[in-house]
Image 1: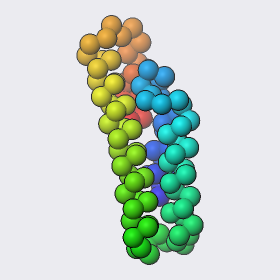
Image 2: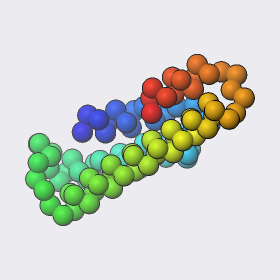
Image 3: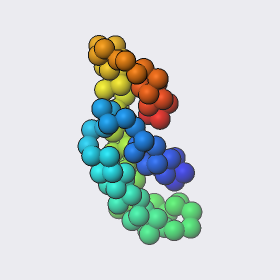
Length: 96
């Protein structure tokens, strides 16, 4: 759960050109997926039900896809675009 919260917290500070949606859309979707997971099993998140598994895998997929897209855009910006501010892109790379 800590990794999920870290992924949610690190998405909004990314530079605008690396975002695939408006700044707070993906973190909001991730939070909407996380809330039912915590509600299903608030203590240790160990109980495995089909709904829990589906929500967990969906949350992981959303985070992974958003990170892959941001990384692809970052690589494209570093390699092909005339980047004047490479430092901000490298900081963004650490966030991804």
